[in-house]
Length: 410
Image (cartoon, one colour):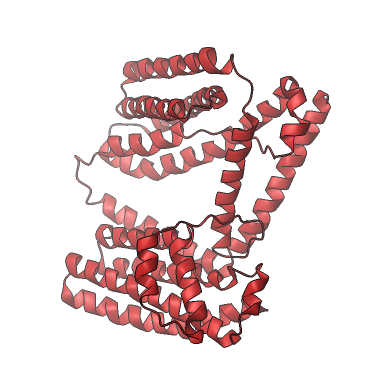
């Protein structure tokens, strides 16, 4: 395999990846979800601006930015798009893969730089509100420096990839996170000298990783392929919340206590077949259960953070809609399994099970949010929200869920 072949291989892998992600992103961000996200972003921007007018001067924006940006800098994987077959076909030409690896570095750096730009842009109004003497041009230099630090983290992380000891990886993550935290904190406070010293420590970490790990070992193909597969499956799990993904590999969690508690609520009879199945699926799935907890937590956060009652209601209702919307695809969760079709159960029982599950999840969420409204605003506002949320939940389950299931069947 010559250099042209590795370039052609990279272009083919990148093209396949872009086509796959573009196809699923179009399905994920359909008209309803896209509208909800646009509304959510506009509402967040409005209340963010309102909050900036009342933010105290001693708000720890430096530590908040250092924490978030430090995490983004520390997590710097290199996307290689390696596949299982590469262990056979590329292992023998590992020493000639430099052009392929360089392109992987460039792609990974560009994609991860977007996240740094997004979060830095989001923090800019808050930063300039607290640090009023700082010019906006300094933030441009800050962005450039963060990109350089990001590149250093990617190199250091790539050097240690050849180690098979997970303890070394955790140690590397921990050390680099502390260093990145210091770099960002000092840069925000314009402590350039201290930031340079911290950056020198990062260079030292990269040098040690190169001398002790990268020079001594060959590429751990199995680990790199495993990590690529994990990232791909993570994207599939996100896409599966909105559409069916045939290539998704599901690894359920046991969660014995929750399963035992839920199963006690059902009578063992034919009409509860799919309600039992979908309830266990929701609890044991890494996607559905974790997503539900995050959406409820996010709604609670906005109820506490948004200053106006109307704004609290808008965000809570929006996240209530997203919660119901995201779990409709559970209807197709077992579509690829033929034994589901062998159940001697009418299709209406299956549809009814999804309706019951979704309305139960939304009612539980409404109950939690009503308590949160009571804590934050009082009983009268909590009761107003409860009335709106219950009415929305009933209408959503009666009309929207029914239509979406019909579309899935079609």
